[in-house]
Amino acid sequence: MILVSMVIFVLTFAISTVVANIPLVLAMTLVVKGYFVVGGFLPERALDPATGAWPAWTLPVFIAMTFGTTLGGGATMVGDSSNMVACGTCARAGERVTFRRFLTIGVPISLVQLVVAGLYVLAFAWLG
Image 1 (cartoon, helix red, strand yellow):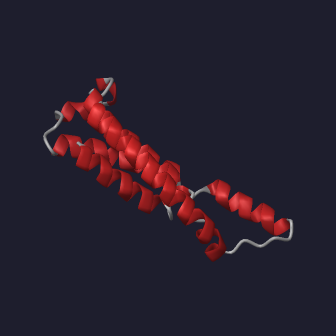
Image 2 (cartoon, rainbow, N blue to C red):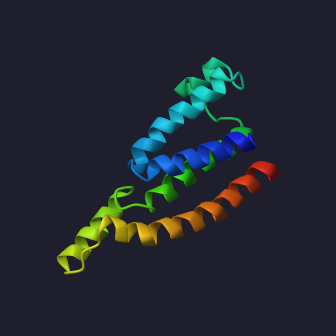
């Protein structure tokens, strides 16, 4: 599950730079659950909402997904609604923030966060 966790982590990070976080988490939750069933890791009845808690070994994948979507949104101006609000506030105050200017700050910070969170996900998957 370590490889699956890291693929989901990087994939959701990349998609989240241009797609809103909450709809992406909702969509990817279905994708991940479907992967577990289609891959034969869990029975099909696991998709039933009444099933209850998922096995503990699935947690690293879901944690990777939530970290990826959350951190990816901070990389670009359109990746998170709060980024757009902040840029609008700056514009009203007379300081225009362009997409390129936002990228020069957002991408390096998000990449550092990606590495740190990736190490956390790896440790969680390895030890968990």
